[in-house]
Image 1 (cartoon, one colour):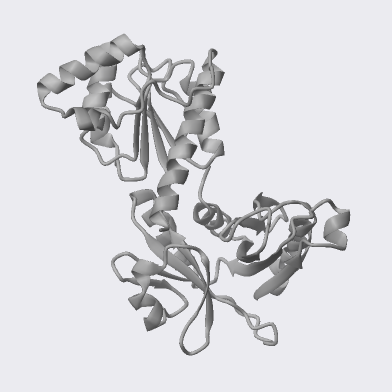
Image 2: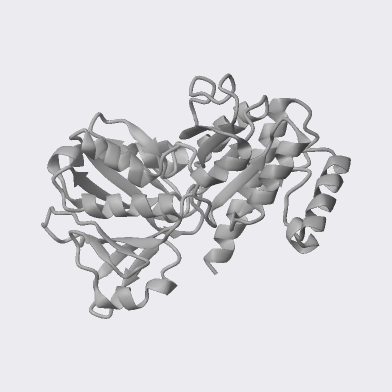
Length: 349
């Protein structure tokens, strides 16, 4: 599944227009947290979610009007009573949704392109937008982006105050500058990428599940009958190459997740040996305890530390009593999400 920035660029490059809706503020309980997004494209379709139900329906209705009118708007919703209660959305909180119109002619496209590029390269940045004044009659919208090298992109100048505080802007939300201006800031983290080594029965449902929870998926195998686009339509990339050579074609960073599901012990060992030399967030390998012990012992003899080997997730996946390929894939996908959530929580602290 593509990121919000990739999806927006696809729409803009087709000459379309989009309205980006994001949860900008939240008080009390709400269905989605600050930073959750959905896109309303020029054909009126929704991608993503800011909470579902009546809230999302009203956001979508307003966004469809903005597709022609343009501009930006901050909408306030109460989920405590009234229509919210009658629709079943008794969350007990209040939510502010920021809507921004973006067109192919907007200078903000440059900021979106930079954000998408850095995500794929494992780098970071901060996307920011001015929060519109409800009393203002201005209808313009702007997009700015500050990358981790200090370079600014887009049609919105970066306030020096935000530039100086770049390292502390780790959570999405509304910030106020000393001059009283309000900006919604959205940290851009490297996109989680999953590399699946081996294209057997477990890999098929795993690629699909991982894509659906927003991992960019690459599958690797040396067999043409297994590594092909027809078998893996959900994969962003299908790499047909000997396993030991695959790392020469891959960019592995701290948001990369590697699963080793090849058809043999020797292949597993080859991949694990190369994987241990990368900064990947997750390395998991399938296999019996005897197989794992044999492979680990051989790698210790080669010079790898037991501490490094202890970081490998094996047996792979959460213990849910999985038996079938689909159940095993589900257990692995759940473990990937668990590890990613833990890393994001620690990164925000």
